[in-house]
Length: 462
Image 1 (cartoon, one colour):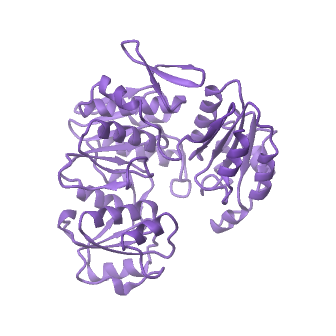
Image 2: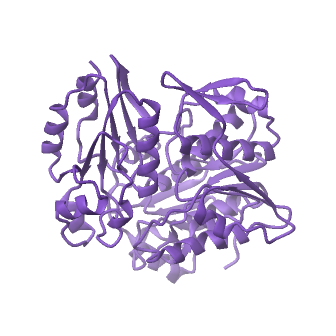
Image 3: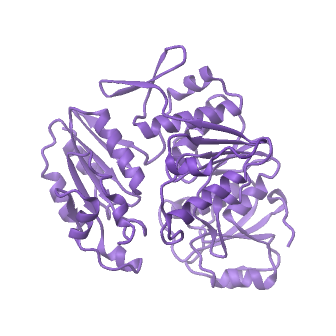
């Protein structure tokens, strides 16, 4: 069925409206004046409260085909739904327009310049950096990003007058009925590949298949388009070969810097030193990528550095929990092997004289998969004390085989690795550590099953 501009779509229904990005889309469309309804079989905080405050929380959890009526202009289906979802089947039966999230974002931004940030790691941080700089300088822009950002009410903004849209380009699948990676659907004008490290083993069973998705993304760069990429990443080098004379290829590396007393300073071309609140080689690469994008958007170097001074980082990306008394506690979203290694190594380099206790929760399908686990070999060598936690019930929920703690230890190839499967025992172990001149780093895409990090941080930071 022919598409229509989202500004002309006034009655919209979201299937799986409780998802992180989907509930933000619902709120953004509601703010725009659309009549928005939705359904989901489970809605957690903060989505529940935010939808309720806007009057968008479904009356009951579950799927209700009767909500799908012919007067709807379109239905947007989230990845949480299944192909046999009753509401989705009803929408298809009625011949309604059905969009995936990325399809809808593309339709909403057809007349805008689209900047898509792709890569296995660093997407959220690079996107956050660019958004911060653009907002600092009063630029008009729309965006769709995968994490809650400080100073931004929503993770999605769609307006009629913004000339550009910045999109975090996830490589995961678009929807239960569209098995294409999301970032293939945005049709970027400026694309970024921050690095490639095999992930999502449940969808991309081999490293070659996973890498191929980025090659396709790179080759989708249009005439007069720009492709910005990490020039030092071996996997990225394989897919960003400058083959199209009509495309501008820009490689980047870590920004020149110095570290003094736990503080990172960027060194500019004029030999000026700019203090920043984030650290680590991976973030120095993220800064370089963001600077290259901003340059394409007309932001000069001096303007970029001026804005960067007030950037605190993306939520849950090396986020400070508490500091003082010669110790700091940070939490980080790191869970994939490349992210784990980058974060742990950066943390140790930033505070070389302090003992580092680092704890990783295995939480995703890939990280808990015995076939993928060997990818973690030697990625957790930097900390003085390395701890891994996982909940056996999560394995059962994901229909994965049991994972003996000794198998985890063997996969990481670190004999002194401590492995816990009970969050209470993990908390007891961490509380028992000597925290004098020591730092704590907690890494997960989950919550360590509700572990009270604030209370733990109070003990660490004396």
